[in-house]
Length: 135
Figure 1 (cartoon, rainbow, N blue to C red):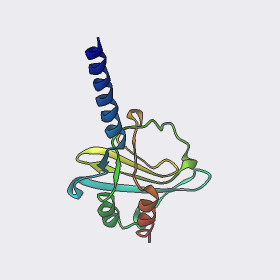
Figure 2 (figure 1 turned 45 degrees about the horizontal axis):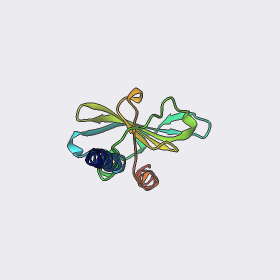
Figure 3 (figure 1 turned 180 degrees about the vertical axis):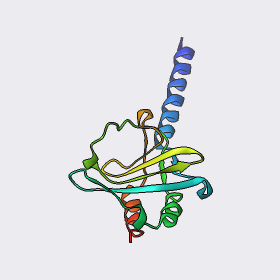
Figure 4 (figure 1 turned 135 degrees about the vertical axis):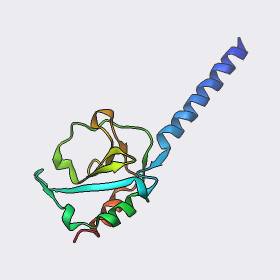
């Protein structure tokens, strides 16, 4: 009986450790810049109005910056979201799949909103860098 409790405790401990690693693990927003293409960047005002600023942004620098940042491995539900919580929205593709990035109060990377998104690590630092590339 003691042996069975010991085995159950060990299994529980292993599960707890794995869950901790899962929720603390990070993955790059994009591993390879050659597969990354950002095709639009929008700026949202405080009241949620959107303006396309793609033509005034150095897209190459944005892509170079994005490959330096990570996001959390686990997904989080964020949709639907109010546009007032977003300052920048970046849209593009990575390795042939859709890539969407929301920066502001949400700070999410996602492929499909219905599948949830990944929280960006150091989002304020990323936003400061991106703002340097706006003409």
